[in-house]
Image (tube, rainbow, N blue to C red):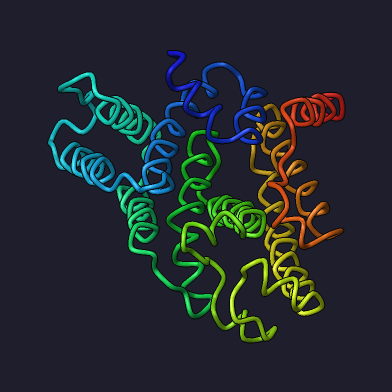
Length: 284
């Protein structure tokens, strides 16, 4: 695997990148290919200003590649970054028999970030979460060779981890003009928005709001873990390592909810690797 895919993944996610180091090399290579595409698309919509032009080009290249009869062949016409990551996702999609709909759903959620879509109900928020995270869980399940009966748990795993990202990134998303939580949740806790000024003026309500969202995470995470039994034992370590680190992030925020306005709560490279090594020891 080229250093480019590795660097794209590493730059985009400390937890997922270093957790993935515990996959066997063959699996790790395909995980890096998957995330090279995901991270590039995500970077386009998260940059300031957003790189709408490149995202549009990326989407067009992927859709054209999928529509070609030779979907199973490596797609390449130039040496551009977009061409390269499309080639990567096409490769793993064909190799592991991804549903084309998963890729479309992912791109739709990224487009929603460009459009600054507002979510009034939980169903709306979960529509976004399906495309931005649940389908990644489904793709990872396929890469790990999990049976179809385990796919619902894999999707739920993606949802749970994404929800922690939403909580952790409240301040960052405010600056991007986004809110992934349903407006009905804010109304429930009498919060007009999730800006730092509002949260600090209503500390009790904000704490209850965060506790409510963490409760959802715990519920979904508990259900998702029922799918661990379907993951080949050797491949469980990176998944459990990622979950351990997300649980750590959740606990830090639970202890002091307004910390999300002070710094980005995320484990260090060292913490992720130590947790992974603990999982290796337990596995033995």
